[in-house]
Image (cartoon, rainbow, N blue to C red):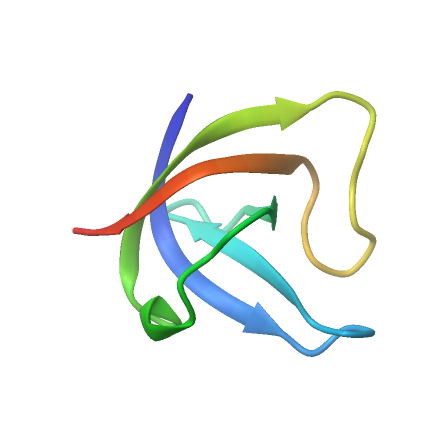
Amino acid sequence: MTWTGVLQRVDVGPGAWRLVLGDGSTLGLYGAVPAELNEKRVVVRGQVLDGVGIGMVGGALVQVESVEAC
């Protein structure tokens, strides 16, 4: 699947990444995320990990396949 939004680093525990979508909802991101894209508009490709979430980061958790600036 593919999502477009703003990438944000969240200081929760050791740190986490989330994607803020256009409607204000968020997705937690799991996997390699380029730090230089923090606060940039990006396209994320990946798969939703069913039944998994990160409390303060976002609803669903996405296993990241790629992150690209748009």
